[in-house]
Length: 283
Ligand code: URA
Image (cartoon, rainbow, N blue to C red):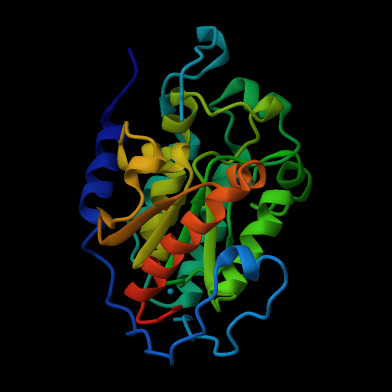
């Protein structure tokens, strides 16, 4: 029998965490940026010159053999305890948040809950960006480039994401970027549900510490896992959903756009919708 009390305490903490952070500064309302299709912008057109100041803040089917998956976090009580005590704190300043994230990253680096992933990863890929960001991006899982470099979205999909960020007049450093998983699934397969569940504590911790006002879920895996949804991203886009105190928008994954260029205009529509909620008119 495993002791479920730490898990219960952690879940209670998570449940109460959505209302425990301080309000953040209000976003300025910059002038409207010229509206152009993302497809055009991605061909190299200049991004809007005005940079808003934002700093202050699929399918999941295949089953694995049970011995390759750790069914719950109780088998790594040390990681659990570190995370739990960390999240008992409140994080008000950017410095406190950065410190909290770096301590959480240490727990992630030691995590071996998903046996296969822990054996095959070069390193964990925790997250990157502004610890005090208003905007958080959530992707699926690290790929080969991310596994090598230890940072999310640095490969081909990341380069496209950078163009989308620039086309919106944002800067990557203003955003906090992470994934559903912190380890690369071999062959870039979809995360297994148990892997996503094992990693959820860390994702929740990152959301709790950064406390973003807005989250973008890139792709079906991110959207379904964050929101507990079963609908594909094509059915979830075009609206804001709520996660805790954050407004969540779902759109297509940049990797999907690399394979389906025609979907770029849909993502651009989504980004205009998203930026409009920040008071920024992209046309
Ligand atoms: N795809 C993702 O979903 N995340 C990454 O970090 C890289 C590629």
